[in-house]
Every structure is written in C-alpha cells, then in structure tokens.
Length: 118
Image (cartoon, rainbow, N blue to C red; front, side, top):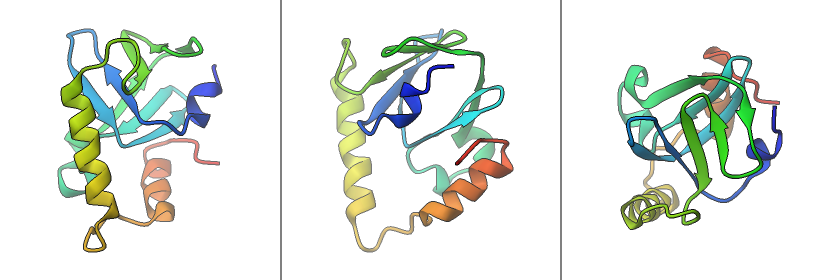
C-alpha cells in the first residue's frame, strides 16, 4: 500500500469509473482500502457523504484504488469546477461560524467506520 497518499497535504480529488469527480474533504487509510468524506459531509447523511473504496492503493500520484483515481486537485487535467468547489469548502472552514467538527471527532467518526487514524 502506498503510504504517500496519506501524507499528502494538498487538496485531493477522486474520479470514479463512471466519470464522477469529487473533492476529498477528509481521507483515511482503511484496512479494505480508503475512506473518504465529501465536503459538507457533516451536514448530510453519512450513508451518502462518507465513502469506502475497497482495493489496494497503487501509484505515487496519481493513485489508484480499484476503479477510482485520486489526484492532487489542479493536476493531471482536474477541472476548474472542482477547484471552485474546493475554494468554497476552504472558505467555509475558515469562517468562525463554521460548525465543522473538531479533528478528534472527525477521526473518531472515521475509526467508527473502520479507518486507521494513527
């Protein structure tokens, strides 16, 4: 399993086999592959905003997990719409009124889903 993916601090995006692309708000190593959270995940239903992708992590960037490809946002032809979405997400997080959960709670939620957080 490539550990480099889990040390990247730049914003990441994920593309599924059907062509769907998403910004990754949170990313965790999981015994079965990766667990990733959508932006604003905490405002929605975890059944649709938290995603487990099963498979071995391959590559050094872009990375592959099963039929999904992960890239640093802005690299390898990622689209401007995703970059705008990320900027909105970043602005949301910087807003003092943001109700984003603290890091330890986010990690606890990921651990509850089986992720490795340490």
